[in-house]
Each structure stands twice: as structure tokens, then as C-alpha cells.
Length: 442
Image (cartoon, rainbow, N blue to C red; front, side, top):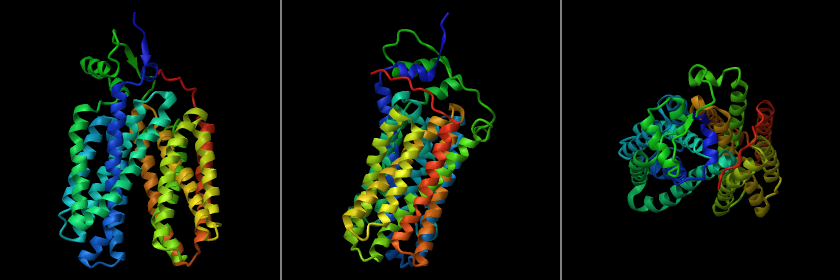
């Protein structure tokens, strides 16, 4: 009689297959177009303001609509992905934000553009957590954090490409052309997702999918198999995906993850939104402000790659909590740089590594923390909590500047949320110790 095998043990015992690589790349491209679309609005805002003769304050609803859309999309689409499937919701989300970005390009007024950006944010907010969840569920345990963080680097690459593309397209096709590009790219990706992206094996097993569908997927995942294994998911669903977040087993971890995401994204958005202004107010040129700000993004990408590997080797909770402490040291150092450019560059680079990079690792941690039946909900709602932090960070930066606080004090104050994130992850690690990882086959 054939014995049942846990899905994760089955994946851990396989060589990293062509299907797993394809899944990783497709999810990478999803978060790349997500990053492009999310960042593009910031680059085209001056052109929108000039065409419609708007004040700077009038653009605030445009930025806010996107952030609130991202938050709402994460809240709505996560539970749907746990009910209907990761692939289904991922494809729908990408299709939705592609179409709404196209529609936004024909906005006749600011009000219409704000409405379309909110709807675009809904799709963006659903796509990213589904991509994280899908990647996590196809990764071997021993390499999961490394592979998830590598996949997520597509977001920062997409954001950078959005900036470069906007600079070139604005002169030739205007801001509407940038939005058209932001709509066409995801729509071109949709057929590839429909044809080649598999549904999550863990999801199909947990939902007892039809044997023919399971066999077809297993043939793609492990072509060398001579006998179809009997797979199981050693998890018991408890209520709806949302209710499970607050069950006795997961409630404290959920709250700790939300605290970490909130504080981390507060720092990231305050720095990315206000650092150029802080620097120019302190007497730096625009070129120097751009240089310093770009090191933050570069540090975040490199940090995600390095910290993902460290999470797999030394443990996720230990790595992330230590990184947030180093992030607190880095923001204090940036405030104490005394106007010396290269000291500030190094310090902000450290903030990128240990705060922005650590936030990418926190996404991988959230995907590990929750079981199959509410993983997409857990990752999505943690991201929604983070979006609340991003709104607060953007507002706090303007509020602190209105109080005429110096750059040194503002940056030094960011050590507090970094230390709170470190404490939250450390406590989470004590309450939910990691299980030993099974080395992946090579």
C-alpha cells in the first residue's frame, strides 16, 4: 500500500525543476511590472501638474488613491486567492491593473485619474502577495528565503526601469504614454501566465483537486517520476482564511508581523518620499540628492539578496531582527553624517540594506509563517498593514518638516520604528521557533 507524503517533503526531495524556475521567473516579471506601474506615477506627476495647471497640494489625492488602492487590493484579493486559487487571482489581478492603467491614460481630468489610480492600486495590491505566495509554495525549504527575495527584487528593478522609461517617454509621448506602457506590459504578460504558470501544488492537494489535473501538474514538476505519489498537506483548516489569522495559534504572530510591516514601510516611504527634499533643504544640489536617494534603492536590492541567503542559513527571525537593529544604527549614522556626502551615502546605503532589504525578507517570513489554507491572506493582510505604515510615513515626513525639524533629528527618530520592528520579529521567533530545514536536492 502506497503511503502518503507531505507536499513540502516531496518538493524538498526533488531537483529544482524547469517548472519551478519558470514559476519563479513568471512571478519575477509580475512584480517587475507591478514595480513599474507603482513607481511611474511619481515620475510623471510633474508633467500632469503642468498640463492641468495644478498646485502641488492638488496632487496629494493622486498619490493617496494609489496607496489606498494597494491596501484595499491586499485585503480583498488575499482571501480570494486562498479560496479560488493563487493562479486565478494572480492572473485576474494582472489583467485588472493592466486594463485600468490603460484607461487612466485617457483620463480627461484629475478626478478621473484619481479614480483610475485607485482601481489600478487594487490590482497591484492583489498581484504582489499572490506572487510571493506562489513562489514560496514551489520553493524547497532550504532555499525558500533566498528564492523568494530574489523573485521580489523584480519590484525594485521595475521601479528603476519605470524611472528610466518615464524620463525617455515623457519627452516623446507625454505622461499618457507612460501609463499606456504601464498597461500594455502586464497585458502582454497575461497570456504567458495563463499558458505556463501552474496552480500551486499545495493548494490543489489541500482542495483535493481532480486526479487528472494533479497528474498533469506532477508530470511537469517531476518528469522522471515513474509512479504518481499520494500527496497530503499536514495542516487543518480552521474557519475562514481571515478568521484563521486570529486563531489561538496565529493571532499573536499576525499582530507581530503587522507591527513589523507597519514600522518598516513607515521608514521606507518616509525616506523615499522626503529624503531628496531634506537634502536640498540642507543645501545639497539636486544631483547629490539623487545620488544619495539612489543608493537607498541599490542597498535595498543587494540587501534582499544577501539577507535571503542568511535567512536560509542562520534562521529567518535571528537574521531579520539583527538586520533591523543594524538598520536603526544606520539611520542614526545618516543623521550624524554632518553633511559629509560620502558618509551620508554609506549610511543611507546601510539603511537600504538593513531596512528596505529586510522588508523583502519579511515577506518571505510571512509566507513561511502561515499554512496553505490562509497563506495568501496572511501575506496580503500583512502587506495591507505595511501600506498603512507607508501612508503614515509619507504624512509624518511632511509634518516633521513643517515643524522645521532638521534632517539629523528626523533621520535619527527613524531608529525607533526600526527597533520596534526588530523586537517584533525577535518575539515572533521565540513564540514560533523555526523547524529544521530539509536540504534541497541539487
